[in-house]
Length: 173
Image (cartoon, rainbow, N blue to C red; front, top):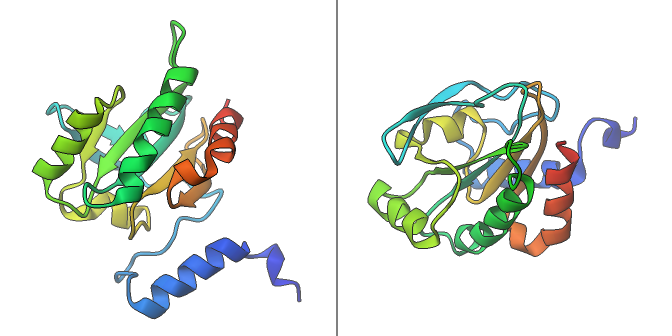
């Protein structure tokens, strides 16, 4: 039996590492590629609420970050660059969303303010949305197609994979 037909090696390594270290919380499993993104409601830092995923019919890049995580902070400039590249015309082509978790709200608000994030930013109170998405560590970026399906999940600093990240965002079009 060829297990590569069922699991990607990097996803299997991450899952087994989290399982063996006890980092997976009860009922928290990694998202499956091709599965529908779990619906949730998020309160944005400006007080508005937003459905996650938001607008079916529009591709989405959702990143889960924490104020204490250096890789989260290093990823923000590339997220901003991708947002500007794919949303420079009269219509937004890809929706971007940053969700803070695993850190105090006030510290996450400071990070979002410091970086002047140009797209919606929300705080996941109690990490409920992160758990629904199977996310246990920042930064994690989820790519969702126009039908609301998860097409890719990347665990780690996107700055380390800049070319691939921009390619993956472009593939959402």
